[in-house]
Image (cartoon, rainbow, N blue to C red; front, side):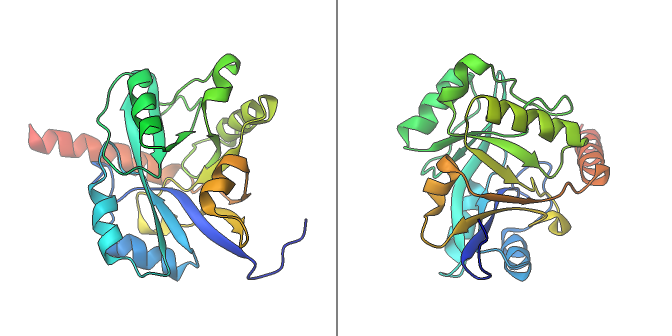
Length: 220
């Protein structure tokens, strides 16, 4: 289907502020950068905190949408909850899953099958539990990681989403999820939108790991 220019809204569904230990962007910087690259909204998915969400909801322009989210650590790997109202602490996967659902949140599996990150390895039998699978992550070190996620989603008829996983300004909007104007973003996430963009390469992931390593040494 060909979509005319201006008939879609563009989102980055996976971003981090400096409230994530590995993040670098101030909330105001992230909003300004997202607007400058033509995004209509972003999902804020800091690690195990919603502090960035709450700050950005106060300062974002009315025309710019902040989707409240969190990337939560579980015993199986990381899971993203979107449209949350309250912060969810790390914990067992089933407990975190229940807490997301109890807030009427959307459950997304980010960067599945990624051996370099805390990735969930979803089975075909449980595919129906998830609202969407992230099939294009901007920080995947190899294209094959995203390809494997896409194959899983297609095989199990899962909704597919994407995100830059931005920790630095230049990554924001590298991967976008476009939604026709007549469909709200929540519906599109659970039924499918227009995925586009490309990986930002090795540098961001390596720099994040170095940042965490030196921060840990500095705090010791």
